[in-house]
Length: 396
Image 1 (cartoon, rainbow, N blue to C red):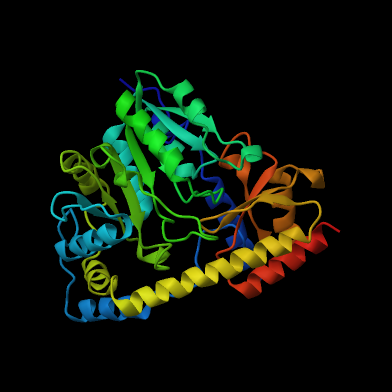
Image 2: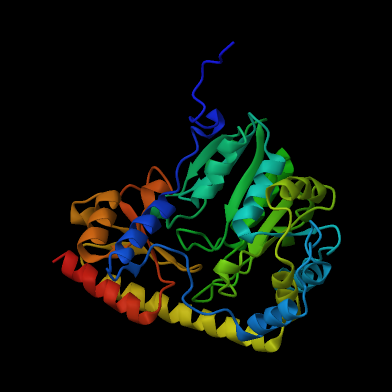
């Protein structure tokens, strides 16, 4: 009997998964560059720096030593030990490198492993909006139900604990947290996080904390990891990586830390999604990630991001029709374009094709953010200055 279905329609469970709005803009910008246009990259979270030289040289050494065979699914133990050392220094929490750390193909795969290893069909997952688009897509792919908690621009995109409490039900399985935040730049304070942790304990749900920007804070803002709060190490999964802190976006190297009881479930998922991460890359990172020379480069990059942040905000201040919420972490600014008479989508589209400046319409990060556009200040100072100049011309 001939089966009556479209073989080329794809899997039905992906029908409700959105196409990445960020990648859509990046693809349009790439197409314009291919035609010879100089596109200013205010869209991507792509640091303009090179990877610290000690890591590059250590990786070359590992390759020349023929470290090219299969690594363990969990990741090279040498790298897991180096990650444990860094995590202990950064947030004061000890993780066993053998049972509580998984090396992943960047932070994105870490998020995939966490969500797909925890969420069952029908489970509810709380996501603060606006948010990195991967969170919602992964929950939907697992058959989970996304519960939005909208962060209000008039409140500086800060978390309302009352709003969180109002949406918790017996089906709440997971809360996704991102601090410093992409796209808002908010760094959540100790008291806010303590109250979230209390809710997690009281209502028995997990927190998935995306801490990819933990090293990037400004103006005295202090980063706190939820894993450092009482009773939380066993109730949270932490995703971090090398892309932003070490300018290693193309290396695709990240990690997850979590409870020893839960981590084998993540490894089970990981071994069928990625299997493992390139051996010589892991060995190079393990040898050099914590070296003083490497950390000196990391600190220099942070200082440069702080300068770029200041440059971007000063430039936006000169454009009367634009306003923004000052970011205290990461390298993004949420810009309100409503006074231009355009929506965020219209603004981003026209700015890209008329002035060749790529930005992200924030509606793809939160349905209540139609008046906003996300700007990245990860580009170098020359490009930031040129992008601001083009925007001033665009809005004259």
